[in-house]
Length: 138
Length: 139
Ligand code: HEM
Image (cartoon, rainbow over all chains, first blue to last red; front, side, top):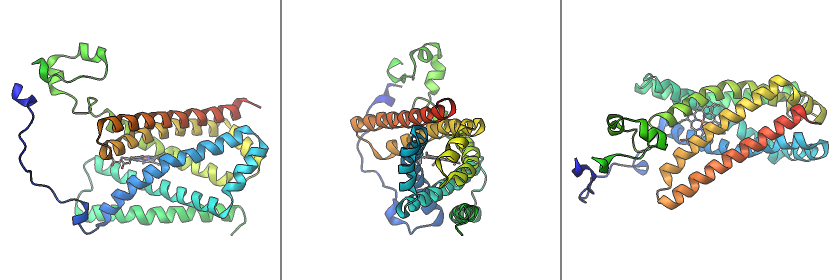
């Protein structure tokens, strides 16, 4: 029993190939993008908090924040945020499917991975086209 | 025997657990599948809440202050926001914890990052909740 606590002897161990060895596969790229979008959304919550605080503070400050968000760079950030959320949401659904033990054969993995990127672009476009149409801007 | 017993998260939990349960352990994180499970529960909640709130944000994008204020005061919208803040922040804190544990290996820096993660999450949560509540109840 006590053996279990002893430090393992140092032998040179075989090393498994890492990222740089593989040519990119769609599921691997989507996995990385899922992490990147998760981290982007993490810091993006500052934007939501800021906007809510602006709305709670009063008309002048809200106009200032709203003004920034409706500039071109502001809109691009919001567009990026929309896409990150949609991509992460679809990627998350893929994870939830996998968590049930389903969808692991190669063709399904590829289908779900392509579905994540294509679906996220489609949803982002739908949301923005819908919003712009609603406001008579398109 | 004692040498291999692992610490558990709370002293009470440590006391009431049998040696067998301790020997089985909860893995190196000492919390078993809790992290994984909470990440999944909040993921499912986020799907519902983020989808519904997308409609609210589309409506409010570029809207004037009176409309924004009136919409955010709506009890249903406030409730959705509060739920999303809670679920989203728990989820993102767990998620960022995984990212930190994957990339930051030096013990001191890891602990510091994990603390900052918690501070960031709590601050985002409480400022957002404060704003929603002020809009709901305040002037
Ligand atoms: C909209 C619905 C969402 C779903 C379905 C979802 C789902 C998931 C799932 C299943 C994971 C675990 C991935 C894994 O085990 O590798 C995850 C990770 C993560 N999520 Fe989400 N999530 C959602 C929204 C959000 C939001 C709003 C944020 C931030 C505010 C966020 C931040 C993160 C972060 C930082 C990670 C860790 C990334 C990683 O470990 O690679 N998620 N999400």
